[in-house]
Every structure is written in structure tokens, then in C-alpha cells.
Length: 210
Image 1 (cartoon, rainbow, N blue to C red):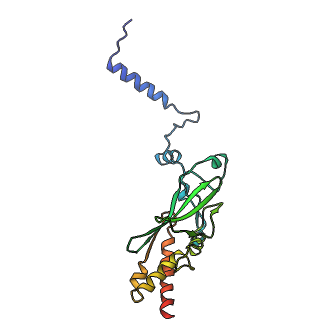
Image 2: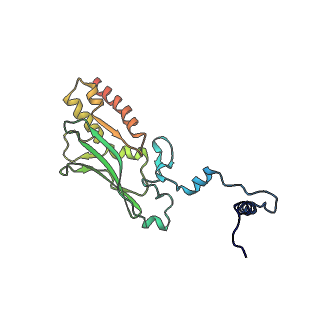
Image 3: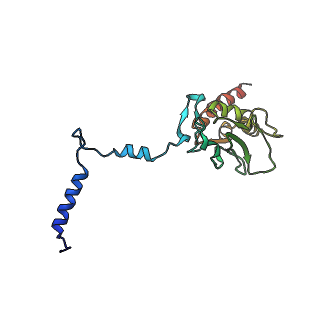
């Protein structure tokens, strides 16, 4: 038997086979391919860092990690391991260009928080060490307003206001120096910097009138 097949016969056979794969179902409807957007949705896992609960100051992320949901703690949740993440960065307009960071780590079922700087000799006082859920924006603000560097001359009103007080005392007539004394950035909490910008304006106005 001749095992050779012409190209025309091969293509005709391929077309018939392809048509048979698209045979209509019992209702006479041809199966349609899944839309590309739906296919991508099924393939892409949910990023829980970008999922939020609540609004305004009460808005909180479902997680600080893309694949760990603190609102659905199943068996895999407790065994999951996560790297430490930076929640907020504070850049001081000092001669040395100092930085503070607030970092979070997952230990078991809880989230632990740590303020730190590049200077190991500085010790931070924090109002809390851990939480069961990610902080809301309001809770983060309360955390910062009640955190200080141990022994800080300008402490007592929180890390942010300590920077403002230092700048105001050093340059009492330079409003811009106070306004630019600390830069706040947070990818997770987009409302953090705007909140302190508004608070800062009121704070400066009160000090001017005092």
C-alpha cells in the first residue's frame, strides 16, 4: 500500500478534522471560545493588596501580601510564609537625609509592625506591636501619632509632628521649611500623605496664632 499522501489531500483531511471538532451541540449551538478578558481573569489570581474594605479613614486593605487574605483564614493561610514589606516611608529634610520606615511581617495568624531607621542606636516607642487584620487608614494614623523615638526632644505628639516641631524651632519664619520637613509615601495607603498635608496646614496656623 502506498503510504504517500499528496499535500492537497492532507489539507482536505485536516479541514474535515477541524470541522468535526466544532460540531454543534444537541441544541444546535456551536460552542464559542471564552472571551480573552474572562480567560485572563481566571488565570490571574486576586491581588489582595489591592482589595479594600471600608471607605475614607476606615478603609483597610485585605492584606499586605498579594496572595494572603486575612479575611479568609483557611488552612493554607496559617502555613503561608511572607517576606517583610514596607508600609510607609518617611523622608526627613535633614542634613543627612534621614529615613524612617514602617514595616510589617506575618507571624502565624498575626501581623507585626516595626518602625526603624538606619541608625541602630535609635529606639522607637510604638502603641502596638501586632494586629489580627491589616490596619485601617485611621488606625495607621493613630499608630503614627502615638509613636516616638525614645528620648526625642520634640517627641510627645508622634513622629510626624516631632519633625514639624523641630523644623519650626530651627526656622520659625520659614513656613516652607516646615511644610517640607518630612515627605510621606505609601503605596498601600494612598490617603496617608494627603491627610497629613491637611493636618500640617492647620497645625502651622495654630502655632502662628499662639
